[in-house]
Amino acid sequence: MPPCCTLPSGTDSAVAVVFRSMNLLSMAFRHVFAYLATIVCLICAVHAAQGMPIVDPPLEAPRAIKVGVVAAEPFAVPDTAMKWSGYAVVMFEASSIHGRVLPEFREYPSVNALIDAVASGEVDAGVGNTLVTSEALKRVDFSQPFLDAGLRVMVSSDGSNSMSRLFDGLVDGGHIRALAWGGAALIVLTFLVLVTLRRLDRDFTPHLHEGLAESLHHVVSVAVTGKTTYKGGVVPPWVGRLIAAGWLLFGVATVAYLTSSVTSVMTTNTMHRQVHGPADLPGKTVGTVEGGGGDLYCSEHKLNVVRFPTLDAAAKALAEQRVDAVVDDGATLEYYDLKHADVSVAVVGELFQRRHFGFAFHRDSTDLREKFDIAILALRENGTLDQIRQRWFGH
Image (cartoon, rainbow, N blue to C red; front, side):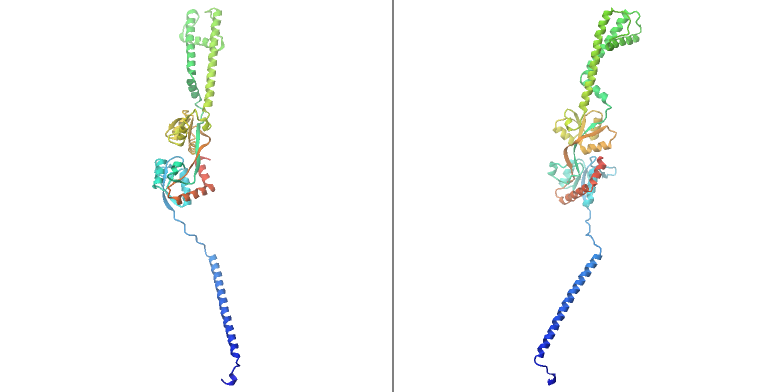
């Protein structure tokens, strides 16, 4: 190298240092630019996401389930088109919407047959007047209660048969027999007076019907007032007064006995017919639906029971005073009273023997039962359950 182009010996090291510094700065700028670009991309992505519509995950498709049902008013009522209504059916269908299931109903003849079908897996669930009992829980599961219920008492609200009850009371107490003897004595005395007056009083009417009427009038007048309008002199005055006094005593005793008998029978009937609840049932004649909860209660408490095939038959017997009260499920009695205004009955007293109605599920259908538990609680919280109950039971 020419001398003019030769660098001092320390110049090479200085140039190398400058180049290395420039390379480091270039690398730092590239890293910073990369970080900035990443941040900008993330910000753009967030803004883009905020502007996009949010898509919910797809809803679960409704699942068809087999549901057994027992016809029992007001829980499950079939119509002519073989569709079902009733309090329990409406509650089940409302819960099915929440649980996203489609019930397919099939009828069973009794609650026991329905529980058998649910336990065997023939159906997934059971609907009707399905009580939650310890025996049933050994075989199936139950949902949250859809109705808190119990037994109640129904009594007659008609007083039109009071005269017939009075007569029955007089017969049962033996008063009619005593009054019949008194009436027979009245007739005998009437004929004695008739015969006596016709033989001894020449002015007495010769016609039989007129004589009977006048003789009866004299007998009754003496019995009730102690006086008579007869002016004849058939017997001496002192004898007539003795006869009148004796007959007056008999008449007063008869009237007093009749009055006391009627009063006592009416009082007994009033006290006997007053039924306000289960505490008043001992000593009464109680109607029940054969095999129902009321029948079981009355049998356990050894009450005088008359069993009927249906509630309608029991209620009509009550209205006709053939039984003193009817005991059955409170909800059933309330529904009957609401729908049969023409039958003179009324539901009285508070619930007793409290129990609960729930939907029956197969023991392996835990997920299905849980869906209905949540649905029933939701319907209770939002007031839908109260609205359904108001429709079917009036309160």
